[in-house]
Amino acid sequence: MKDINAGKQSAAGLGLESKKDDHLLDFRVYIKLSVLMMGKVTDKVISSYLNLFQLGGDETAEISLYMARSCLEKGKTEKAIGHFNKALKIDPGSSKAWFGLGKAYFEEGRIDDALKSYNKTLDVEPDNLAALKELGKIHIIRNEYDKSLDYYMKIVKLGKVNSEVYYRIGVVYDYKKKYEEAVEYFKKAIDKDPRVARYYHSLGFTYESMGNREQAVYYFKKALEYEDRKKAV
Image 1 (cartoon, rainbow, N blue to C red):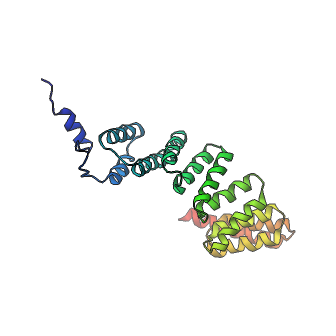
Image 2 (spheres, rainbow, N blue to C red; image 1 turned 90 degrees about the vertical axis):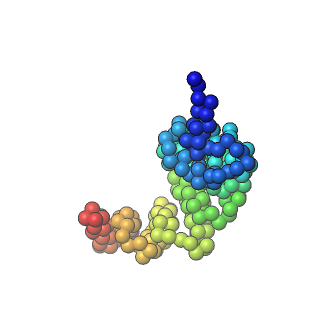
Image 3 (spheres, one colour; image 1 turned 30 degrees about the horizontal axis):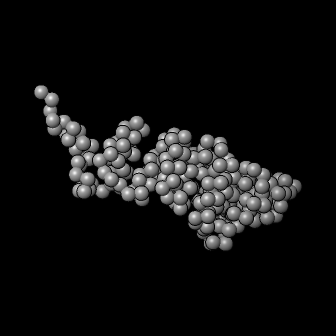
């Protein structure tokens, strides 16, 4: 005889209660746990959850955001893009969703779409540091060095600059053949974090471009020193 409680037991096994008005398990915790599962299993679990509970728009958007991030971490960029877009249809003012969408587009090689998404992030949150950094990077890729500097310098003005931002500013100045400025910012990057070998490499190449071989050799040796230290760890 067919067990009439089988359906209820299956739902309980997934942590899903049949009473829609009684959320015994906080949905945010539930989703965070479920996204740790394999892709197809996660989709089924989420679908079951959505069928059992009447969720509001904010909750549905948050679930889509969790799903998008999970897909992105697993390299499933096309699925991630779908989930980010779903979240944005519900909440077009989500800077997290716009930024995540930009990241997914960038990993897909869709640079123009990534650019638009990061700019949308700034429309919602003008001082979003992650978006400012990514826009600076994209404009370097597109050889639009002045635009790149605009974004990086905004981070500097916000007073939240790290070694990597200083380094990228140095790279931009080096591309623009403004070597004195490049040296200044590469050194600032080193002052912030003296353990990164590529900072010394880039500074060495800039000095070489300036015709200063003595300084170039010095910083190339420093780069090798920190590479050796890294290997020894």
